[in-house]
Amino acid sequence: MEVIRAEAMGLCFGVRQALECVAAVGDPTAVTVYGELVHNETVNRGLARRGFRRLDEQRRGQALPETPLVLITAHGISDSERARLCGAGLRLVDTTCPLVRRAHDAALGLQSEGCYVLVIGRRGHVEVQGLIGDLPRAEVVESAAEVRCYHQEKIGVLCQTTSSDALVRSVLEAVTARNPGSEVRFVDTVCRPTRERQQALDRLLPLVDALVVVGGRNSRNTRELAESARARGVPAYRIECAAELHPGWFQDCRAVGLTAGTSALDETIEEVHRALLQAPVAGFQVPGFRTEVLGTGPGNLYAEPGA
Image 1 (tube, rainbow, N blue to C red):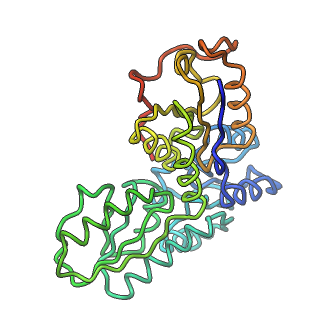
Image 2 (cartoon, one colour):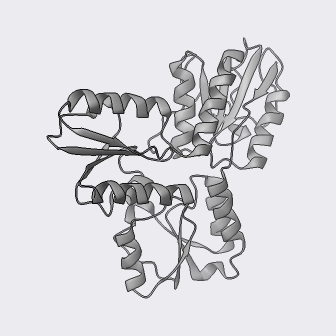
């Protein structure tokens, strides 16, 4: 069985920057990670072993960390939340991705122009919460089906940085169609690494019979990659590590594609690649693989809650 890797996959520069930042922290016990540094359980467990504390993402904006230093994750926070933390005497270690910061600036810019702001993204996702946190007039739209007539003279649209181009196009078309009397202003805030991984997937899918996507359970861009493959009729399986590969997934496959979300570690991708290369055409015989079925049907993919 041939294993074909996507031309672009895995860690983006924003996540690498965040990982480098935490690696340089001298006293982890003095630092609370404000949510999940990245949506990767291997990384989160490693931070806990080093002594970092972590505030659950759902408690951001409510509780105050008990340590003097607060590490802002790559997903960012609103300016109002930043002011709340600083006002409590806490010092911030900021690893916000520059492209997320750009999306914040775009949201504020649309607001200053008098627009009613729509954010295309996952409702409740920490990045999206940060994007709308400073906007008194904003709404999150997850799909074109949710778009309605907003009865606004000016509508501003931007995206969660890990949104797919297909989703963005469909929502924009719906906004224009259902608001014919409104001026619609769009700022494209899909990040370049996300778009590169989506485009690489488009080139990969015609070459493979199935796809493995490596990434965290809560990673939106990982899920977008798997869902894109499934929408085009390619069975896609989302895993966090090589041990989650299933023996029966690839029995009839001549070629399997491999890609990964932007929070997947390089070493994890390599482990999965090596495991796939050891797989005989008739199925896996690699010791240590988990054997329970993670879903049913040839097009199944993980569908855990989260973003």
